[in-house]
Length: 232
View 1 (cartoon, rainbow, N blue to C red):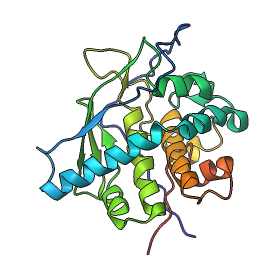
View 2: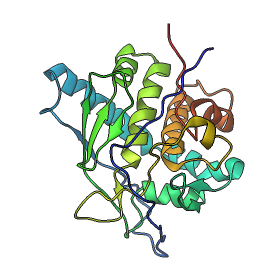
View 3: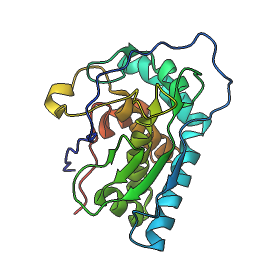
View 4: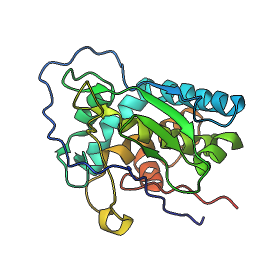
């Protein structure tokens, strides 16, 4: 199967933030990111509804016990996960607690989600607006389990960028801007890509389409980058 490499890019540049995991977590409950459609930027009511449906399904997946189990298991095969290409390397159990919203030192900035017309990469802005690309929209609208898993990967990935070290503004904890596929491959997995691919693989597992196992699934869809299959 042919594949193409798309790199998600943030429109702002930010140096890695030092992560200091709290010794006491808030609770065992999964809180995690929050997101709503941004109707001001969508083209139609149907677009807004499709975004709402994608948000709802992505939230359902990242709240599954299987998602947390899979995310916590990543380090057993891949080693520590990098917060950013130049950031700290942390056990996947810490990444899981951060993404679940359990660490009181960090919070999620409310995200607003919209589609874009362009063929470029999806992105998350410093204003908390997630702009999902035409490719993500096409994947979601296609309706098949495989194509929708790719859209879930994309949104779960972008939601990771809304984890903030500040409560009064979005100060991104997980970043991945501007690093080429060739440079990243073979280095520690990047948190944002890993989170997206774990969400995708969990969704596929739930639907009986992850016969290859978690590690192979993550390698297929990317822990350093996003590698969706090309559909002719």
